[in-house]
Length: 155
Image: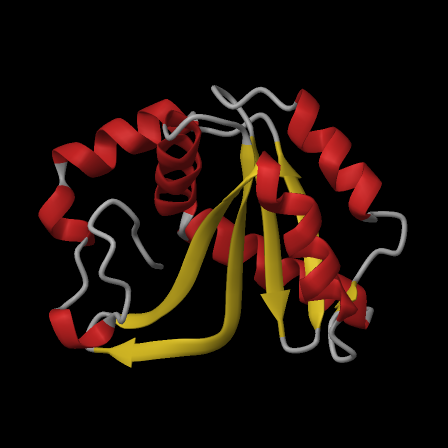
């Protein structure tokens, strides 16, 4: 099995395991006023009783170009698949359907992978609704997350 295939397998597993939280953050960001992309870094997980949690952010369209330029200009960050460049990501943000799809940039070590998540088993609005109904289940213990934004979940 190739290194790229192994990397995609664990990434897809992480996405599948955390799809409810990813969809919640995507829809919550969209409800904030515009399209955007979810960014998650697995580089600094917090370890707690419930396992690992990762910081996740919603980057609105208006800030994506500047974010990508700064993030990808860092000498230790590269996009895994070279054909996914800034223009492609911006085009995807402009055209994706936020009610059924999610755009995700997943950073791991010195690589970032862009995922255009389609044909999801649960839509972002449904994720949002499910998390809101079961809010206490998704709240990390206070000492496990540095994120104090009550409307954003980490995973």
